[in-house]
Image (tube, rainbow, N blue to C red; front, side, top):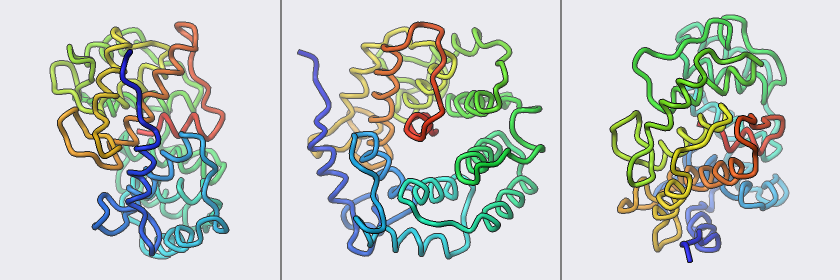
Length: 278
């Protein structure tokens, strides 16, 4: 019988990284970070648990409120902070968010910044993104990795735009899958679980599948360690980020099997967008 994910052990792994002062850390001894907190909350949500609230987890709510009050860091970290606050029902200053997005786009109009700005504008503010960014003239970098392709496709999907060369992109993503079932940063590179997630997210957004679906699942499950969490590879130490990529990847594979080939995923609900978050 094929190996299955041990959800109980995974949740125990996550809970051991929860801090008394709020938030989650990469290890039981390290302090909480925004990234680890986002990933821990996302894992619990995807595994079917109710989202935490200020009433059910006051220490987490206090941690998030403290993080909202300090100067925000890079746009990717800001996205994870604001998304976690949205999931947990923490109020945010919309004007401050708008000002931060405008400042980020002024400094950097890269694909990555455009992706996060677009998602924050739509999913946090409920507004159309700034016209300088999303979709209108969005281009993939000349040298791109699976994460770039997944972000590019997500913005295109949100903007309701068709993707030129979709078949070629799907073929390129399929070629990033290696003989061990995992995915590399681009064709011919080492398999890591974060690349599995990005590659599967990209394929899903194109209505495509990996060439070896079962071996992809086997690689991902093999990354779960005896401590319950997932590592970047079958021989790596477990962390919350790899655990999130592993669970999200398995959700994407399950959805691919349910959808007819060529049918694009729905991104109308929070959970579906969360699973595609790269």
